[in-house]
Length: 475
Image (tube, rainbow, N blue to C red; front, side, top):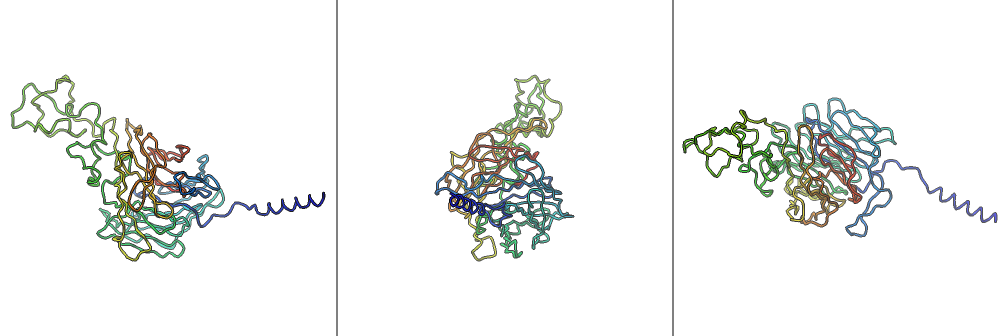
């Protein structure tokens, strides 16, 4: 009996010896990191989050499964221009605060396990440095400068990190009254060596994503309209001056298409002109093919104030004596989607310019899919593009904003030809900007209205609110 007890004791001890304390921050992780530019001149914030555990595909099928922990974030980071705050994912409490380096502002962030990579911008709006933020246990963090900098006369447009934290990819534009193409850079975070692909005469690199293995970099051309932060309210425009369909996108400063800006309840034209009892002379009459309902809201009509056919549905005495305010009380919902063209660069191939990039047009025109690209990222080996599709629109009533309900989906595309493969998540609660995904593409961090949320097969869960300050995010 004593011998049996001794054997059991020895076996128990052996098993106990295999149990280890929580490991230190790892140098590799099955995740792809990406984030979007938050201009230093704007009071925007950068959000990043970190997850624990490893998530993998199961059997090559469309269902996703996790091994280890669930892969939900343990921390997320809010990086305002002047300060970065590390917060717990479970309750939102602050775990650490890090001030921006003197004379610099945080402008972009990407995450890798318990490490975050940050780009800064100097007070001039150009130049800057790169930093690595390392979380220490559960109550502290250190910020270290990396051995390479943002070249003088340029600024970063976005930042992405490979799954092992060894490679940073970022876009550069030249500073000036009009940003000009500068190029795409991939840097070795350990040695500081960089490789630059020139962008002169080519695309203005932004919205950068990198594959988990660091081989492929995807980006979009910032000079290709439409531009702007999704969900940004813009001034409505008349249908006759509306931009063309997505295949012929409008100029960067052009408002969205007419179907994306619904008119207010009262047609603006009858309110902006005062009818008279006698019609004007024929030479003063506007062409009949230009109906008065196409007058821009908030802009006085430059035609004579007399109409040949006064409106009969309103008492002339109800007509306003002056033009309405530039921004009406209720602003129509608007949308500024990204173009559906994505460029993919194989960084192992020779060459020093972006001419070797391959253009991929995502099949977002599929009638079964919501319209409008609202963010994307690459998977671990660069063979798939994960994108959010939908209409990121909101309506303002005074200072209060409401997200317009509409179909939205997170869809996986083939990076070889842009063909749709499958849908990973969908609902009808309004468009979502895809900010990042975990390495197994099971959990996604998104922005809907002012909400930063986690999306998975289990549903949609609010993490925090950004107050419409448009953060980028990573976990």
